Figure 1: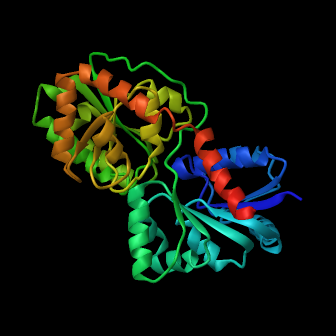
Figure 2: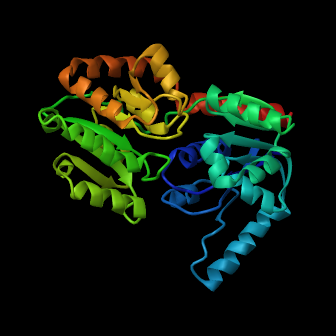
Figure 3: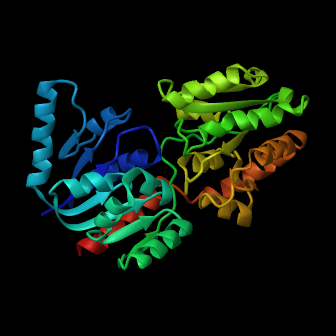
Length: 366
C-alpha cells in the first residue's frame, strides 16, 4: 500500500515556499510508494501547475467566487478530512491555523519553518504552538531559525524535534553569464511586502541621490511587485515624486524568471526576515552576488564566512547605498563575488534538498 501524504500550502503564489512544495509534489507523486494530495488554503499563479500534476486530489480551500464553487470546494475539502493520512506536511507556519481548525486525521506531521518572527506575526503564537504540540518534526531552513524556535519552545515547555535543511534551487533555471553594461542593474526580486522591505526601496534610492555621479551609472529595480497592492502603489508614488524616478523602477509579477536574471548584475535583499530566499540561491547560480542585512536571515552567515556578496548592518539603508556605490566604483568585484557565490550555492539543487526531506519522511513513516 502506498503511503498517503497530504501537503498543505498557505497559497499557490509564485514565491519560495509554494514553489518548493510544487517541486516536492512533482517528486513524491513520481514515486510508486506515495499517494499525494495537495491542499492550498489560498490560490495563486501556480494553481494551474499544481492542477497539471498527477495528484490524487488537489483543491484550493478559499476559492469561492460563486455558490456552486463554494459547494464544490467544501465537497473537495471534505474528501481530505475523510481520509486518514500517513503524513501531513505543512509548508509554512501560515498553514498551522488552518491545520488546527480542521479535523485532519494523520499519523505523523511535519512543519517546514522558513521564518519564525514573520510566521508568528502571520499565524499567531498561540496557533503556532497549538500546532507544534501535534507536530513530529520541524524542518528549519537555517540554524538561526532552529536556535530561536528551540529557545521559544523551551520557554513554553514544548518538546520538539528539529532538523536544518537549507533552501533550494528550482529546476529550469538557466545559468547565465553576469554581463556588465554602462548601467549596472541592482535589483530586488520578490513580492511587494513589508517583510520583503518594499517600504525601504525609496530610502535606498534617496541615499543614492546624494551621490549625483553614482546614480547615473546604475539602475535600481524591483521585479515581482503585485501592482494591485497598496504598498506597491504607495512606493511607486513616493519614487515618482522624487528625482529617483530616473533610475529606480518597479516591475510587476513575472512568469519568466530566467529573463529577470539575465538583466540583473547585483541582487539586493531588503528583507526584514528571510532565512534562505529562493532569489539569493538562483542569483548565485547565475553568478550574481547579493547585498543583504545582517541578523535577519541565514544567508548573511554564508556570505560573511565564504564571500559571494556584501553584508551591511541591519535595516541600514544608507549602508546598502554605500555597498552599491562600492560595487559601481569597482565593478570587477561584482564578477569576483558572483563567481564565489556560484561556488557556495552550487550544492543547493532542488533534488538534493528534496531527497533530504524524503529521507526524513521515510524515517517517520518506517
